[in-house]
Amino acid sequence: MELKLDHVHLRCQDLEAAVSYYQKMLGGEVVARIEARGMPLVRMKVGDVFLAFSPQRDDEPEPQSGLHWGTYELGFWVDDVQRAYEELKAKGAEFVIEPMELRPGVWAAFFLAPDGVKIEILHRD
Image: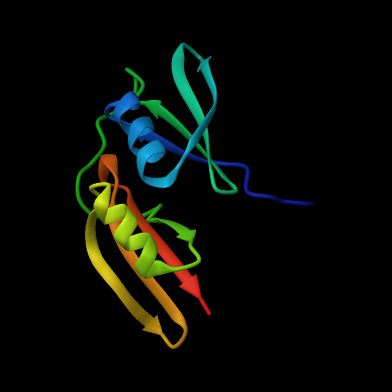
């Protein structure tokens, strides 16, 4: 069996605000707007990753706040963490961890996106 990651699907309180945020902060390019089972869905390319965005369905329970098991963060490789940090900060990104060396040769910083999604920018030497 051959496996490749196709996409990461994010549920959003405000679909258009989330789409706009990922476009502004990460240069996301909307590649499709469709309706799936009566629900709007936006497919976006960010670097070489595809993200899908949709609102909460009416028949789904409200999400629980706070720490939960499952997806922890989205990690994106960048060529220069400090430069990416400065660019994102200038665009209004809310960093929770500023650039730091995690271990020799590995630099990262973390910021918050809509709906509590944590995003890591990372560079490995």
